[in-house]
Image (tube, rainbow, N blue to C red; front, side, top):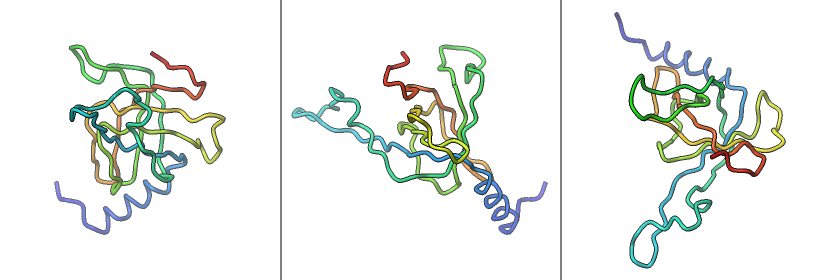
Length: 138
């Protein structure tokens, strides 16, 4: 099997990006330290700093295990992002618009498993942690 040419990759990425109809913000994880140099998790909301709007493609899935066996988390959705997006497995995703329309309240997801890189974009497994109602889901 031959490798994709740079022109083919560019066209695939352009097609993928133009098909993303949702908007999210990536919450970059940052660790704050307490007076003793240990991670300070006393106020979890301050551990993620949300950046600017980012195009994305959200696909809700029936919750299922990410591995066939073992104690593994379930995923509630998959997210597509453009290939050059800076993302870390500890980051969070806040979905603010679906199909071009603002949501009444943003949905917040945590990333489950490694970020998968394909030829035309990134794919993430997500678990819903806040549905916008203000009540925690756990």
